Length: 444
Image 1 (spheres, rainbow, N blue to C red):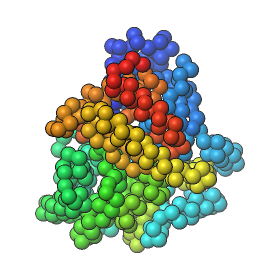
Image 2: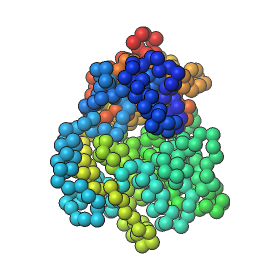
Image 3: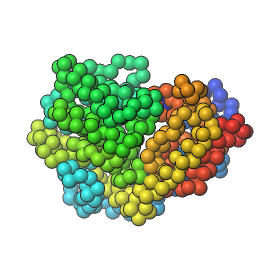
Image 4: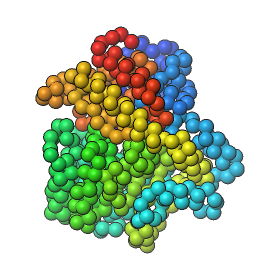
């Protein structure tokens, strides 16, 4: 996450002469109130005032195509979600220590999308809370404290979850109970068997944890390896790694905050592409389409063991308004055909980007699944030299062409293409043509 932000956010207060007076006033207020904790996108930050579908609108009237935000997964301000939240907020909104109908309806519908072994749902407000809770569940079940993640993983920002998020700590040593393994990167690490190599790396890391005395509690991964640079293929390659996890007595925690809820186009969950069944599934961002929601689906025996020794309660997790938003998101995914759209438009988008790559040698690789695509820039196609400067120029050049996008990966040189799921083929065409213009040096 940190490297992704550094690659994308080049805002420098010394350059604020480039912005209008209203935007400058907002920048001054933000600096005064939030201080150095404030993070803004782009060399010239954008003052946003509204959004709908796959577009966001700035105060100056400019409409931007959103190719980045997976929080409004079913589309910005989806009318079903807005109406459901407003209706419920006018009737009842309280915590989960009272009985009310819609949270049970939501849990039943969500659990029905998951493997039967994941029998129970714990509701939270964010993906960070979900992953934090998952670590506690795994440590309690195994009696160990060691976790394995990938080298540029991001899983949230609590103290415990930052410890398993190497991208949040660039240049710093990982805690003693955490080991990081290379991402399943077949572009930079050519291999005849991605799955076998990845499983071997994981096996070595687990042996190290056991030798250190930390033991092995679990392997945490999002199945699209988003912050590592987006690695989706081949489908099924995770199977060998999960067999290693099981052999060592640990748990597989599938972080579905980014690949879940239909984004990969091959099913509701990212892990489905690999034919594996997690012990714990964590979720967040897309659940409420902008309303803070998170959740943990877990095996019944793991949860029972946890609750036998630890109490758990979340004041806002699973509130009636959250459940209403979540139900409306599930309705929109189904009724709007968004999983099929992610498959169709994502396939079309990658085809067009690969055609572009054949004409633009600065594009080293195009990879992904559904509407989650990575496009890697290189300065030398043979040596595969990462070109973060070009990625930054592309991000800001696309912004000038009314397109919002971000970057990912250890070098900050991979465009992270992750639009709301209603993204259409003509949106893909507009994006690819604008990217071609940027790479050709055409003025905006």
